[in-house]
Image 1 (cartoon, rainbow, N blue to C red):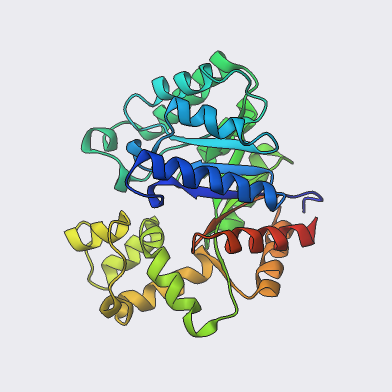
Image 2: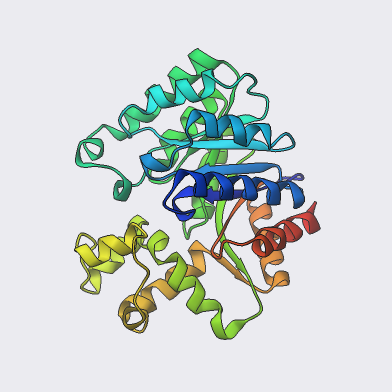
Length: 311
């Protein structure tokens, strides 16, 4: 069990509008709420290449985030990802409040050529390149689907493992501890703090269905009940281009997602969320990065309040 914990908020820029101006304005607002909630980390989670921060946006964000560590996520399988990483970091004067999060990237957000790239090789090459080029810059490494390999890289290159809240979380944390010893481990936590139980589960299923359907074990269960993840309708939901239709919410698919949500998300009233966070701390997690299922200021501050109650 870690005696210290740190909090943060994940920002999905693909949710923030169709124009770069809209995305920047809302990203800056997100940083402001992180500071207001006394969170340490602001994780920029850009699944699509078009959602990456432009260099001028990164400058603007860091200049407005003096009290935060801004963590910029890059998918190592995206073509030209190394060039994008190098350019972003090189053009920022100080990296004291900058960190990188290197992930493989979900296939839902990759083109066919990127899907064919050797996943582990791209991760290894990116870690080695960024350590060689930028020395001691803080780096996180995504573990989904590659926990053992990512843990070995974390131990060798002084990285922070970044795991998903999942039904395999305890197993993954145990494996990371065996390989890395005692070190900080970050957990990505989709959350919804609410006592409105009449709408709570509906909101989770409606807003988080794409995220849940991108998990490998959920896709395996999906096929068992007769749904093909590659169908155009399902692919649109998985890529979060369309929400889960009401009729599917009432089908076997809805039942599957309800079950999946119990291990993939954290939701309920404030005290329940707090107790779940304490349970994660006991498992060895020390950095909690919350993804608001409903993106608003109130949710960010509610999550921060729960974390501050543990400090």
